[in-house]
Length: 160
Image (tube, rainbow, N blue to C red; front, side, top):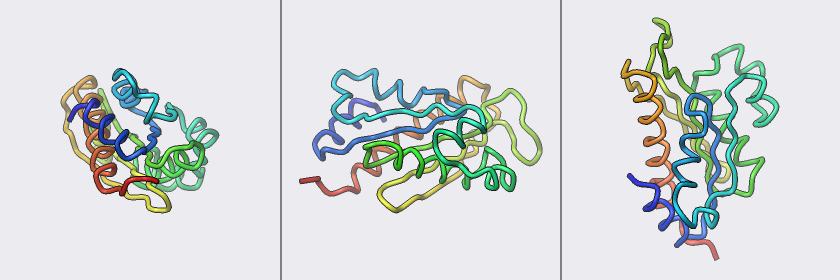
């Protein structure tokens, strides 16, 4: 999936996008803004690498972080909802994961949690990319985020 396709489809439907990224450190927003004309569909990005940033910028609850950890679908959901709430976007994608090296038996390297917020609806999913190495996990997460955006844009009706 390429960002140019996303740009064209989002532009055709007058849809604005926002990102909330942790392990990808802005790679998803960079992929979108690398495309000329992206200002027509991209509102803003939140790079929230620390838990404090997730709480301050996106409204992630400390109780959620304490109960589930930063790499969880619960935190990804709150990140996506916070990005949507704190932007002028119609769709927000959040990414939080273990890019590596390392991880644990409970949260292995390559586990990435995604949140997708559209209006009042927030969905989440976890993808196990495996111990591909830091660069490959981050690139795979970026590409999956682009695919989530594209799927969400495709399912939206044209704004009037």
